[in-house]
Image (cartoon, rainbow, N blue to C red; front, side, top):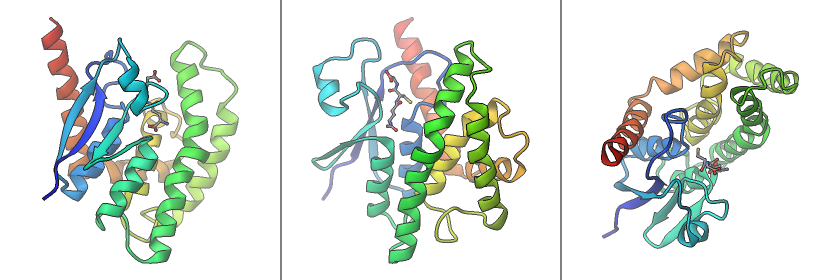
Length: 213
Ligand SMILES: N[C@@H](CCC(=O)N[C@@H](CS)C(=O)NCC(=O)O)C(=O)O
C-alpha cells in the first residue's frame, strides 16, 4: 500500500506566470501515468526555512513520494519516468534517449529561452539573446523535421519537458519561423493530460484568489 505522491507548488502566484508555473510539468506527467497524487502548497511571499530545506533556492516544484523527497522539475520527471512505462520506455536505448532529451531540454534549450523571455517581459525585448536562442531552434527544427517525438519513437517525459520549455517562446512569437517546432508543441500539448494539468493549475490559483479576497 503506497501513499499518494505529494506535489508542492506555491499557495498563490501573480497572474503573469499562471499556466506556466513548473508544477504544470509534474501534474502533466502524473496525469499521463495515472499516478495517485495530491497537491500541497508553500507560501509564495513568506518563504521559510521549511521551504528552503525542501528546495534550496526557495522555488517550486518539489515532490514527496512515499518518503523519497526531491526537487528540480527534470529530476522529478525522471523519477516519475522510472515509476511508469507510460512516461519512459524500459529498454536501455529508449531510456537513454529519454534521459538525454530531458537534460537537453533544460541544459541546451531552457538555459537560453528563460533568460531571453525573462528579459523580454522585463522590458528589454532586444536583449541580444535571440541569435543564440535561434541557433538552438534551428538545430531542433532539423531534429523535429525527422520525427514526431524526441525519444524512442514515442511519447515520453522528454516531450513533456521540451514542449513545456517551448511554450513560452512560442507564445511570444519566437517560433514563428520554426513550423516543425510549432507543430510539435501543438501536437504534444493537445494531449488531454496537458489540458487537465493547466486547468487544474489555473483553478488552484483562482481558488487562492478567492481565499485572499
Ligand atoms: N530549475 C528549477 C526551476 C524552478 C523555478 O524556476 N520555479 C519557479 C516557478 S516556475 C519559481 O519558483 N520561481 C520563484 C523564484 O525563483 O523565486 C526547476 O526546473 O524545478
